[in-house]
Image (tube, rainbow, N blue to C red; front, top):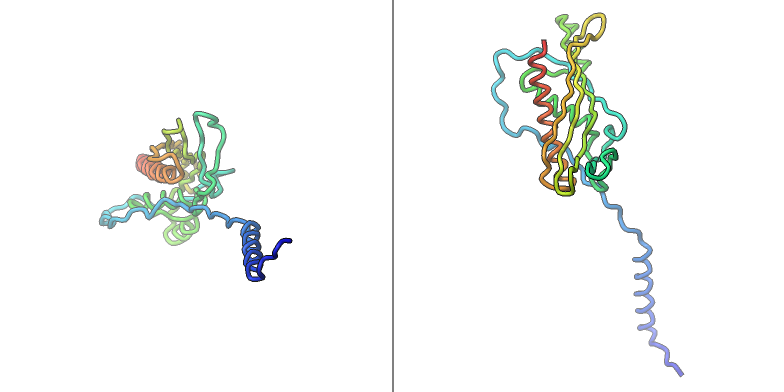
Length: 215
C-alpha cells in the first residue's frame, strides 16, 4: 500500500506546480521599438553672423506619401527585390521622416539666411511688403538600401521646387532633383540611421548651394 506524502511536502509540490503554470500562462511583455532621430545636430558654437545674410526663405512642410509618411525605419534589398520596402521590426523614427528632414534642412539653411514658416511669411509681408520665395520639398525615397548582404547605403531622394510668392500666386522659379547616398557602417538599423542622417545633411547642403545660384 502506497504511503501518502506528508501534508507539507504535498503543499510545496502543489505551490510549485501552480507557479509553473502561472509562469507559462503569462504572455511575454511586448518589446518596445528603439526610437531614432538624426542626433543633436551641430554641437559646436555657431560662427559669427555675417554682415549681410541671404534673403529670407519660406520652407513649406516636406511632402511625402505612403510608407514614407509613417514612422517606420525602412530598408530595401536591392540584390533580392528592390521594389519592396521593408520595415525594421524593432526600430522606428521618433517622428515621421518628412518632419525630421524639414527640421534638418531648416537648421542647415538657417546658418546663412532667415528660414520662415508660411505664417511667418504672411507677417513679414504685412510689415514691409516683401514676399520671400517659397521652397517646397517632396520626399520620394528614404531607405536603408542594400546592394548586398554586406554593403548598404542610406539613400534619400528629394524633389525641390523654388517658387516666387507673387500677389497673383506662386510662380515657378526652378526645380531640382537631389539624390544622395552615404555608406552604412553596419548592416542593421543603427547603421542605416547614421547613413540616412549623413545623406540628409548632404542633401540639405546641395539644396543650399542650388538656392544660392538660383536667379
